[in-house]
Length: 354
Image (cartoon, rainbow, N blue to C red; front, side, top):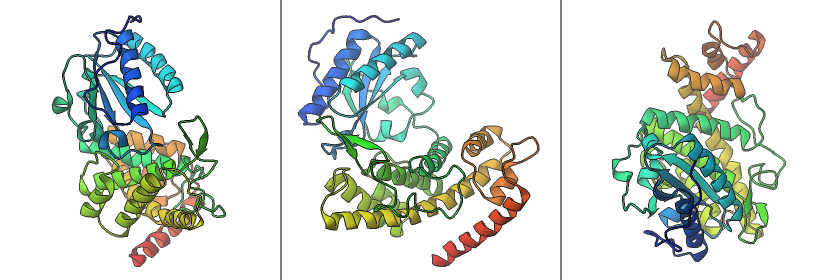
């Protein structure tokens, strides 16, 4: 196991700075801590997210990947995990730290690492991004589709059995249950935690990213690029919703719930429209699940089956394909018939509305 040593630089010179002193200070703290504990083992530090794309707000979190040379040993992983926890606790800014070895990246990384990151520091002076592959499109699509399905249920406290059409998380709430004290809180620089719109943005952003991957075969490198890419490749009214969510929730209101009455009315309208976008995503996800479940490749079927065991989809066709001999049954024949009628009618209504 690596042991702490005196950092070779008391204040490392960053290759990229945000121009915001508190964030740059946290970046230096991370570099000093890792270089001190793992001298000669760190390939580089890569920042993604809004601080990397240059459109961060004072309330934005900081996303940073620490990449080790070669393979990361188990002892190093444990020690690095402890160090990450300490740095998150001491940071004045919400800090999302990930640690991995360069060797593991050769299987493919998230598009944001290659398309939307900044190299912050490398004692070796080497940038690995040009030689690091993005994960294959089918793997990326699976990741976005299945995690977005999980998020639209779990982020907003919906029932564990998913039914189309969806309903609002809380129809009686001012913002329909998408934001508020029962959702993710945002930690301010002074340490206070307040309600925010971050889960709303993340859920819709991941759903849009999934649809771009599935329908258009397009990778997304940053959330700033998402509305324009969606408009270019998929178009429609949902491009306007995604643009409004980003411009208002992220940029104007800085992820906070606005106080002005007219702004709260606008946020309520955005939340009201979000349900329609979720319906569109869920229909596409249903189609995707059916394709994967009908595959003869168990590596494609297994992730969908595992997710459906945790969050069953009350859909007769999904159920029929899912419950092959030896598979887990969760829906009675009577419920399956009712589900088939409900889903068929809902899909017909959705298509008529188009």
